[in-house]
Length: 219
Length: 240
Ligand SMILES: Nc1ncnc2c1ncn2[C@@H]1O[C@H](COP(=O)(O)OP(=O)(O)O)[C@@H](O)[C@H]1O
Ligand SMILES: [Mg+2]
Image (cartoon, rainbow over all chains, first blue to last red; front, top):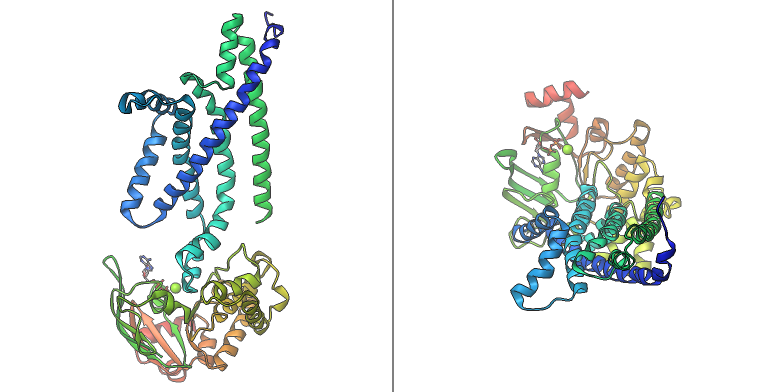
């Protein structure tokens, strides 16, 4: 079997640096996705059509087209349209953040809708206003549905993050490809990159299961 | 005092309440009975504006709550409601369930609201459960907490929508007993119920509804012994 990892040893630190790069843009994307996704979710659950519509259209577009297409359109479209030479980090965060917001908004909306309607009625009958009802009664209950699904979204995001290598962002994947080109052996660096992704996802998945168990216990 | 004049409620083309007029006096206990789907819940829910009436007027103590400029939140503070399925807040303890609205809505100090909450929990016999979460309670206990929660807002009127219909038979009495006590304190109560014995014993007046109409009303003795309408006669034959 022709498999030789000895040649990538000197390049291991170079590839490992990609972990930081990956985590950095993934975490910023998650924050963008959370903030925008929460706003979109709140727009969706109102009964005001002019708020609901834009949020629904947004979600439909970002969930209905491939992420890699969104990434490439943002990275190459913005320079063409606005004559602004967008840094790869920004393109990556924009594409992943905007895309994630669509999914996050659905997770939050579904989590809120799953709360028994009687809770709203009970709150209304007590004269509790919309905001305290939302923040003290509905969201704490929706949270149990939201959090496990949200952990899944973060895991998917981390896994899909390798797409940003296509626009030249120096993440784990991109670094593995560069090393491959240097040593004329692609398989070994890619297997090593795969191992890193697997460990990261393994850790996230375990955190996710732990969160899910905690949520179920508090039932 | 609640004055209701020509109350009509439609859902789309479906007329669920048509032209209901009646007056409920202070301290009066009114039992609303009638077949399922006759509009009893909707009638009750119009009184605290959980449903917006399509037509007609409702006044509470002379103030028109169906006025377009009426403040729903202010109105609801004075009206307690108890639901068939309790709707306790599952993530709050029993004490928090009862003290939450007095703090948030009436802006009472937390200790003071808790003191009041404990008084009402004592009154419904559940002081020992104050730190429990609702999922640890039986149905009857949940409903008694729900009653305490409504009472803690110090309402002038209490609405009950089939408060014992979701309970196991052995728990019906404990809830009805709490309601009887409440009736004796002079609370104005409107109770949708299938408990005919409770209606006979505790209510000052029966309202019989059928098909969205107030078909007949009168004191329990007359109503149960000599109902006037055929609809009421048929209904009583079925349930008694
Ligand atoms: N939110 C609603 N939307 C549409 N129809 C409703 C709604 N609420 C009640 N109804 C209809 O109104 C009628 C009366 O219902 P309800 O007041 O619940 O009767 P009851 O409490 O006497 O069983 C029923 O036919 C029911 O289907
Ligand atoms: Mg009903």
